[in-house]
Image (cartoon, rainbow, N blue to C red):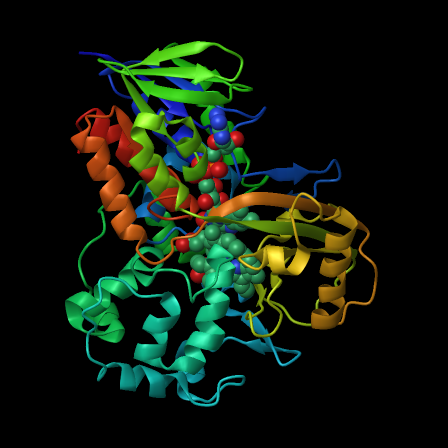
Length: 477
Ligand SMILES: Cc1cc2nc3c(=O)[nH]c(=O)nc-3n(C[C@H](O)[C@H](O)[C@H](O)COP(=O)(O)OP(=O)(O)OC[C@H]3O[C@@H](n4cnc5c(N)ncnc54)[C@H](O)[C@@H]3O)c2cc1C
Ligand SMILES: C=Cc1c2[nH]c(c1C)Cc1[nH]c(c(CCC(=O)O)c1C)Cc1[nH]c(c(C)c1CCC(=O)O)Cc1[nH]c(c(C)c1C=C)C2
């Protein structure tokens, strides 16, 4: 029987689900309901008339692994190949990443030399921690914080500085609260399968999907791409998806359509919008933040809503700055700041280094992005609804001056407050997911969960979750 499917949320996860559903002959109609006036969610780029592009959300996608291959396959199908801006592994933006410790920038150790030598701010060679790791016993715990896991296996110095910074640079989160099992599944699996991260990396630890690469994905691995963006910014990706979907007769894409409630009927679902309209569907794919979905479910689904509400998220202030000329004292991807150095200042991306194509044309300039807040937003800036743009701009400019010695004032800036933009997979996240999915199955709910709140926050993970949901629904996997 053919199905009508409603996709709630037109972020990259919802668009990906819709794209894959729209290819199936088993789906007669797909209705996407997006609450805001644009699709794409956190993929948002400002394009200036002089050619400059500024990213407010993601700025680079990794081509590695099955999920990276899957995204490149979609990019190829969308005809975006000529718009790609690849950055290879031998590019300075891939080789140089810095951390700001003790008031100074330090290059993160990389390559064999970096692992053998003692590189400040670390007080011993990383190789020493790696050798000792082989001897550490496997844990019997079902989950552990990222900090506890790394302290136990690699020592507290790496946990306090490197892993603390990494968790801020990916989740804007606190490694003492984040779950290793859910945030870094390959690390967890390596210990479970091989008894060691190092052995897991060398011999593999199983798990993970397999995706057949397109010519584009094959080219990316032959050419050693470390990351990629698009000529007119990451927003090109949802725009291209939207174009394709708008040209399909059986797809309806509604913007300004905030969903209020979702109720299971005997044979499907009734979706009520804020404006009073009703949409009926055989199945619902919810590609919304967990908290938003929780507020839509009926009181009878309280155990499910409760679990959804337990998936926290953090607010990040993203400040784009543009400077006249070349102002950076170092060159690389950017720098991260461990929480012990300055908890409210997460890091600075040197956007002009990986993607100089996004600089304004003609006149030299430097584009930087300062990211602030995350798990430390409230203690640093107070209530997100009360903090002024001026305060955020001043804090960001100050950081550029003190960390990078840039004394000139920015010639252009943009402050964006991204409320609840990155979900936090806290300890026990895997159990919450298992229990929610069991609840859905036990109650025969015509509902699938998609998006960053569940199985990975990267653009690749979210796109893959949309595809998996669509394919499971139509019985491909
Ligand atoms: C600052 C920042 C930097 C990042 N950097 C990177 C990076 O470099 N690389 C990378 O891979 N990933 C990065 N990410 C992560 C990635 O961008 C996100 O995890 C991903 O875009 C989330 O997609 P989503 O579709 O799950 O959710 P969202 O983008 O949140 O989409 C959900 C959609 O649902 C809509 N919605 C909400 N409520 C309702 C309602 N009631 N009714 C209807 N619609 C509703 C929203 O308007 C939104 O469009 C970054 C994220 C942020 C915030
Ligand atoms: C300073 C804050 C942040 C910076 N980027 C993000 C935050 C919160 C968000 C983010 N960055 C990445 C991802 C996707 C993860 C993935 O699995 O692909 C997300 C959600 C990519 C990323 N950025 C950094 C790392 C180490 C990674 C993981 C993938 C990779 O190795 O490329 C480091 C990093 N992020 C930021 C800075 C300033 C920085 C390091 C110098 C900004």
